[in-house]
Length: 406
Image 1 (cartoon, rainbow, N blue to C red):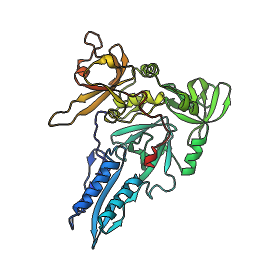
Image 2: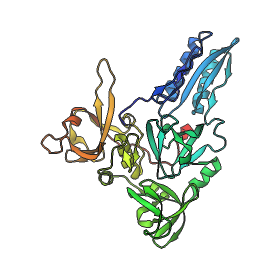
Image 3: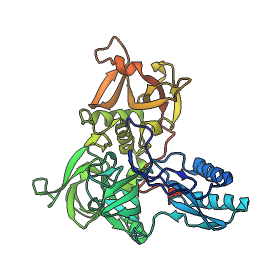
């Protein structure tokens, strides 16, 4: 995605009784008139915790502010990081400042017992605001688990398996309790591996479709009929999926071995897929959604945005010596740091060899870094920053959010 710094759901630290509540990239501000200055030591303690536990608001939520209450202070706000709250309270205790703890841990009471949910369609769209007109942030695939953190009307603020935080409309989800989540994790499942396809109402591809499917979709298996698996959807629908289009989920997790060859093959199968801001599926991808999808199909998890992926893996090149690159390496593009500005990573693609890279820009396409080749892109060459190798340096895919966020 082009935008690298997102305005968080809440500005992380708010002092002197001033609370700024923002949503997405268009903020609304509610100001509580200060009644007393907050001690600098409290400000520093909270800032230290935020820097340690929640430096990136796209994947970690920490909002803390202080209000006076007589001779004491009230700690307010919310976080999805229990360790961050514990660290802040410990820091405050060491300062010897009388404090009332009102900092909420997420999930909060608006969620109830069903603190987990599964995507109920092939692809569901997540947004920066709890409304359909809001900018799309990312996508989640059928069968993936999200943690539900809070509710607003019929929208839920969730955390995806890669840690991203965004809003999703309730009709796209099937919600679960902790025990329901464990039952789902233990159930036999298949993962759909073709870029596009369908499940059917009968074990016959000429029968009526139940739904469309896309690469990475996960379904519970309840039986077999000939060359089809009988599968269940999160909402109870039943369908049939061709055995040739899927792989047992456990085998896919344990036996899939991403290689330079498999990454390039996967990328080429997505040629021509349209560019979609916020897209992370074979139905439509932005630049980082494309690289993320390539790796996910091959069993590896990249972070969501280009600027996040630029911190993963190991550095291979930063001078334009493309002979150092191997197929599967990621190329990052943007603006170099200057004495007056930070580096900005605004695009990413994947090296496929012979001077070429594949990327999502208007659609998934191939361009070259070699001026003599007909598909040479002077524009991309001119904003090249560096390349990084992910193979052997990034984790495998997972069904739900990272353990540190739970």
